[in-house]
Length: 322
Ligand code: UT7
Image (cartoon, rainbow, N blue to C red; front, side, top):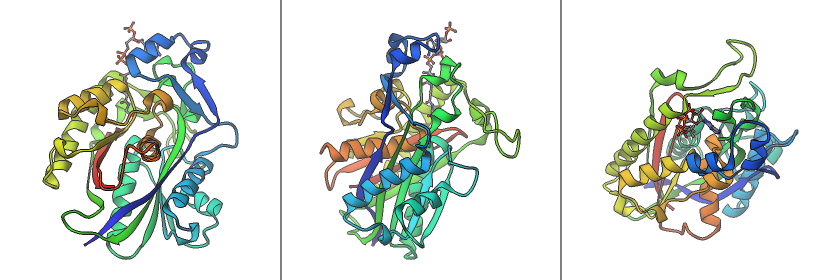
């Protein structure tokens, strides 16, 4: 059967790394509070000129190199972001231009923190139809630009960055072959008001700032993430015992612990980067994936589960054989 096989990963972070202590000089917070409630120690913040598209292109170059292909071999770019460079054109087309790809299909997907999972499902579907052969799937964000830097309840939680993967349509053994085995997505728009940006081109005509009722988002996240992982594993006849690595959305270390506990998964099978990157929204899953691939933890043949939950609410999971 034809599956989308992950042949390369890459990531990019802005050079500027900001420790909790630096934020404590700007708002009424402390390193102790942030570490205890979130597990976050550092986040990277984009400099002027560093954008969702430039970070996305840097991550894409690394993924293309890891896959051992040329940029011009890519025929599809799906970029997940809630912080595009401009309202339009799609940042995916800016990445395309930065990579020097003359012609391919390129567009953005916005499902906020679940955006990478949504983008993976879209690309996987397009690859399996046989119309496309090699896709770049990117999660890239510059949330620092939509944070209210006077709101301690949100400004300490997020960071900037990008992650990318190359997915290739390949013949794959039905039982033991590599590739994406399943993706499962959800959305529930009744919760729009728990995590949103208070602006936009069609409402205020401004970019707006991020607003979040953190405690309520937290509660929904643990329930929805455990549920969608169970659902995805069941669809491929697996249980949590089959998982080699869980690469979760990196929002809060306590959410990671709680969902792993609900799944009965040992914490040493969970890839954690929230301490170093904070919450990078759609970039967090591919960033964490790239870290664990490059440091040798995730190896060919491993069963890897990806999951994320974000504004909307949207949430989803994917099971793949790496
Ligand atoms: O990526 C999309 C998904 N997003 C998430 O998953 C985020 C989910 N939510 C969370 O991670 C947590 O709810 C937070 C980290 C946002 C907050 O943690 P919490 O344990 O739920 O704290 P809280 O919001 O209930 O606030 C507890 C206290 C409050 O003070 P009072 O009212 O008890 O006096 C806050 O004002 O902590 C206060 N507080 C802070 N204190 C110091 C809130 N932010 C800060 C801060 N520093 N930065």
